[in-house]
Every structure is written in C-alpha cells, then in structure tokens.
Length: 114
Length: 133
Image (cartoon, one colour):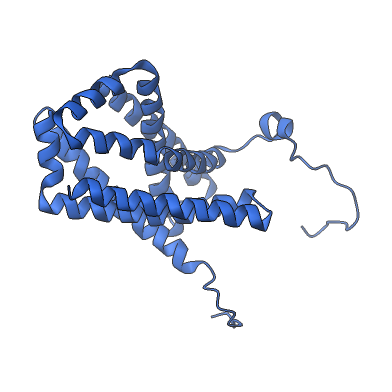
C-alpha cells in the first residue's frame, strides 16, 4: 500500500469501480430486455405497455437508469477532464451533465410510475 | 524514455491533419477511441431516446406516432447509428472488463480481441438493422 497524504480526495478508485459495476448491471438488463422482446409476442402497444408496467420490470428499469446515470457521469467527467482545460468551462459543463442526468432519472421515474 | 534529451525540440504530432492522416492507431486504439465516441454519442442522444420511450408508453396514439416517426429515413439512420454505438460500447466494454482483470493484455491477444469486438458489434448492428428495418 502506498503511503498517502489525506487531502480529501478519493483518488478516483470509487468512480472507476462504480463505472464497472454499473456497466455489468446494464449489460445484464440489456440481455434480459432483448430476450423478452425477441422471445415474446410481436410488439404492439399492449405488449410494450405490459412489459414496462410489471413490478419487477419497473424496478429493473429504474436500476438500469440509475446505473446509466452514474456510469455516464463518470464517463462524461473523464471526457471533460481530458479535453476541457479551463476550470470555469469544465465546471460549467460538469454541472450541465449532472443536471441532464438528474433530469433524465426523474423523467424515467415519471415514465415508469405513471 | 531513457535517452530523452531535455530541451531538444521534438515534432509534435498533435495537429488535426496529423491526428487524421499521420498517426496510425493500432486496432486496440480504434476500439478505445470509438468506445469513447460511442459513449458520448449515447449520452448526447439520451434525452431524445427517453422522449421516444415516454411517448410510446404514454398512449396508443403516442405509440403509433412513434412507430411512424421511427420509420422516417433520417430517424431510422440515426437510430441505426445509435444501435451501432450501443453494440460497440457493449462489446468493447466487456473487453475492457477482461483487460481490467488482467486477461488478454499481451499484444497478440489484445489485437485478436479488438478484431472480435469490431466483428461482433458490426454483426450485431447488421442483425438489429435487418430486423428493425
């Protein structure tokens, strides 16, 4: 273990790990959703709506959306850290990304529990 | 670099033409930068995709409207690009997870797995494209 000076930073490990765990969650959801769509009846409105109103599917989709928001936050922050050097512009864009992701999460909840 | 001489001027291959025409990325490099580009693309289209999910689940007329909307040629092409972005991000992501676990890091295997990533994501895109077209 490397001796570290505590400066309040968490050295990125938590984000790195979170990005990978959320990726795995989304991958599993993707495979399940595809299996349901391909294996099920031809997609009409009734089939489509039934799928997303089942209790477990609501929770699974919310889990997916939460993972997506977290995953996209880490990814977008990486991109901004790499290409946007002025601190003000970077902070502004980071806030925009966070607001968009928070908004998307709220919107998803609204769509699922309508 | 052990033989680097401080102060010596070196060529900087970071101009746009150099990035586009001179630097030749190895295949794993293409997997990596396209993973980033596809991720950015997916983030930028999130609101649009969620809008379509919202309308399609809200009501039957909304569902039919979205089905017609997705049938428009430009929309269809944009969706196909996003399908590719998702497939590439998915396949390359799984490759990176294995790399994180120290599997397939030697040059030959890394090159082979990047070929597999390209082949798999393009094949998946073609399959979804044919099914959805």
